[in-house]
Length: 176
Image (cartoon, rainbow, N blue to C red):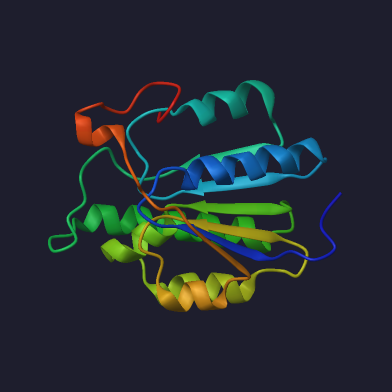
């Protein structure tokens, strides 16, 4: 089907819901006959619910999970985390310019840049390569001001209250 005009959206902020919002947009696009690709940066550590749902019900929704199952430290980056993020960046580039998808979601790409796994210039380069008919969504905390300025829509999720502060861990089916 495709879009007449694709735009660039950024979902950022410390609040919960950035990935969930992008998945909702992807689900809506698939419902309208579009093909969707999500590349997840720094999200290793096993299958999330969205992976299971896409495999079972949405063959038009491709998800590439990348990253290792470990903590990343901004001041002491592991070269393997940088290597994996660079691979994810190449997957993102191929998905974006390869003519196979109508919507490309780069989940946690802003966080990958904040950690220093990729550069903000890498993100801006991808944004500049976006074909006119493809929608591009960039998620993750700490979106750079230049990325937000180059986007068509920016939504900031604001944390008002979160149950993590009360010791509730990530729950299967809700956060995972």
